[in-house]
Image (tube, rainbow, N blue to C red; front, side, top):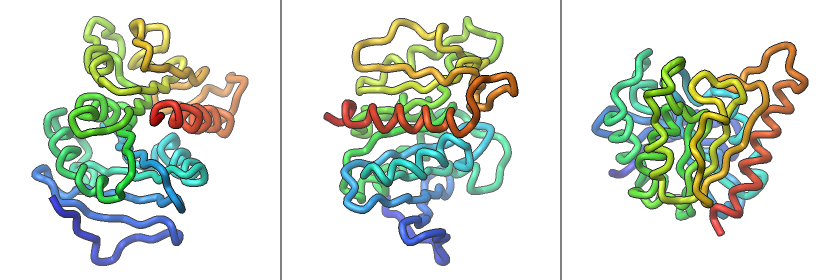
Length: 227
């Protein structure tokens, strides 16, 4: 489905633009962080409890363009519409599938990514849509306190190189709770991090160090994933 530009696109720098994309679930919005001479595109969406202002998504958008990777931060239709509660997973998938052609217009290899619920969407649809790899930030392996309700099958079925970045104390799944991963999957732990990579005051690393760990791990992984 063809993308349509916003009438008054928000532009914060010469290399950041926004685009509205109609989908069957409502209008989605893409904030493009363009890398000069980009060789790849990371398309990443948010979770069910927040938007693209999440610290990890913003950090990736700030760092990766300097490494030759454009970043497209995707706001699902429910967020664009100002709703507070995310719809069913199938509706999230519908919105993601419908905006994918707008991402493909960049003419770059695409890594599908997201945090929490957005990571689940990327895992469920990445291979089907032609993503070269999947980035799962804070993958919600199970609801808090309910490890028996595992979503490991979604993660293990990506079928493409996958990087999981998980907080060491994430109530939705600590790193040690993840199943044995296949050779094309990697897991990076952010020590002390919770589901949004927040850190306790007692942690021996601060937020800038945690974000540097995340962006460094992703930047190091991308060439392997795209090789």
